[in-house]
Image (tube, rainbow, N blue to C red; front, top):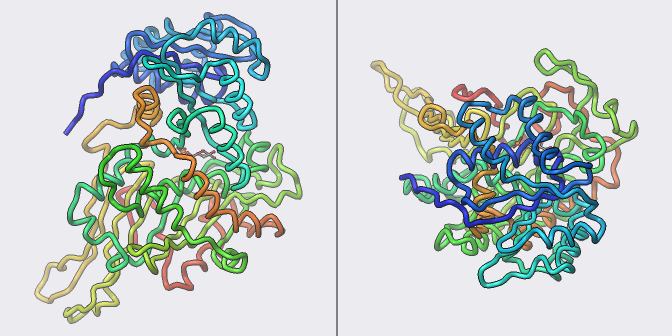
Length: 499
Ligand code: BG6
């Protein structure tokens, strides 16, 4: 069933960091798609704020140049949408750490406004303070004022709590839209649909039937030009309490009573709060971190992390992390959740793999129950978005013998989701006032609380376990599952899921 999207209410989108990377790479392509699809109201406008000298024409020109360089899906209808969108883009040149620019914003904004902080995290608190102090965040009956904040939201539990407290001292939680771009991905949203629109899935979705869950975000990209940011951040902070925990929450949450934002966010919050908080000893046993060394990814020769630009040569930052987590609820008692993510790996693959328990008894001559491969549901988040299920069938022939096969669905075979950035639905919901796909303060803090024991122990330790660029991560990550009698799902191109 397709539900037509109503255009968003008239809104001024004020973007701090108008000429920055996020605006060019994601926000503008998303707004272009939204223009093409009629998702923006007629009175929509963008007010970009940046330190770079220039005027409206300069901002439009800079964004157009980037579009051309990036060759951003330049189909004729997108070109047309971009020309239309451009007319609604305006610029204020100014320093957002100073008061003057907020006076200018005030003179230009009336009615609904969403302030998008596409700037480094260290400015979040100051910008919100200044917006509030200039009376830009006060909502009126017919005018909302909202703030969209990108990650990283905090650096650890204490800093996330402090940032939430600082922001919520000035604006209400209902005005804050903390973005996790994974929630804009169709396949991530589909986890809830797969679970709650299918009786045969949800009925077996528990510790009675599921042996373990794996959540993987493997990337082939290396640190590239992001050295300064990444050396201070590392794989755990960059990916786990945010993106991977959003996947975990979607997989492990109880069914919400409705799809209202608060109902969904309550359930996600509950499950993140139920992730077991490890003692230092337990964290040491259940966490592995790695760092890539020199290697090859396809045709590409990749320098080791510590030899890369802007990385301290004695850096102990991890580029890979694998964790075994437990979710202490009735539904998930005893079911391990294994999470892994890394840079400079052999294959790009983000997936959730649910492995079911073996059948209790099998009466086949050739295959004992313990020899039957377990059923598996593989939710392929990206690339090659899809869903597949491994089941056993009878091998044709006179003897009763079994064969494992995969039932395989690929989005690309049925739908066109390729041209979207994932930000379209998030921006639409920001304007429409739907917070379902945004993170609430308590969930952010619960995520940090669960990873804090790992941050604490690793802050005291030396170099992570090495793995060559172009491999599947350090051997110690394999050992984390092997001691429980499991193996990582092998990362393979879509449609070619091997046991
Ligand atoms: C970002 C991280 O939040 O997510 C990056 O900072 C990472 O390091 C990226 O590469 C992954 O997102 P996606 O959508 O490319 O899987």
